[in-house]
Amino acid sequence: MLPGFWMPGSTRAWLRALMQRALGLLLALTMALTLLPGAAQAHTLLVMGDSLSAAYGIDPQAGWVNLLERKLGKGYPVVNASISGETTSGGAARLPDLLTQHRPDIVLIELGGNDGLRGLSPQQMKVNLAKMIERSRAEGARVLLLGIEVPPNYGPAYTNAFRNVFTQLADEYGLPLVPFLLEGVDLDNMLQADGIHPTAEAQPIILANVWTKLEPMLTEDADSQR
Image 1 (tube, rainbow, N blue to C red):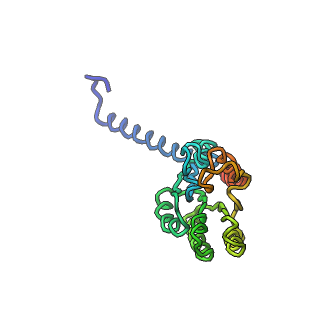
Image 2 (cartoon, rainbow, N blue to C red):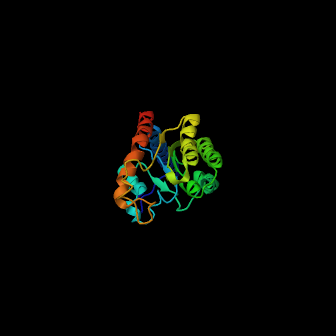
Image 3 (cartoon, rainbow, N blue to C red):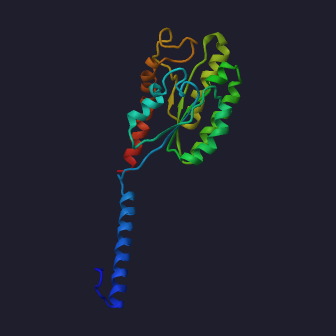
């Protein structure tokens, strides 16, 4: 209303009611648009890993998880909850709070390497990973399992039992599986001085391994919104 312009009380009340109704309609329209099939929605990815996913010994920006986030863009936020030295037991203990905090659509589990290097029981490792899978699913997230292997000097019995944990879990839960995260990495020339951790040059190869199984999962998300 212009200064000094007089308006009957009934007219002012009518205008206020009209404005409130218009604002209500605008809010309802905004909410409806966000629910339309194909409307842009963020799909959060949670990476539960160890030093292989925590970019140990290299620039964090060069790590495969960071490369993945750049590849995906803004529509797919990536939460990297990887910790160097993490075991399946530690990951299983941390996961519930992370699921509550981030509500991920997809959980990428890259754990087990440190269990193997410490010679821990493959059976217990399987139990821990199964807990993570079941908890993730209970919270509405899908799971991508990223396998790893231990050096052959641990003996064939242990290395086979260790490797089988990942394939068994993938079969039992119907999960997509990357059998060996470091497949295609030149283990003679693309490892750091410790002989364990990949260099920055190896990270795009690791990402390519993950992408072969992750991309179909993201395509399913896109199709479900159409």
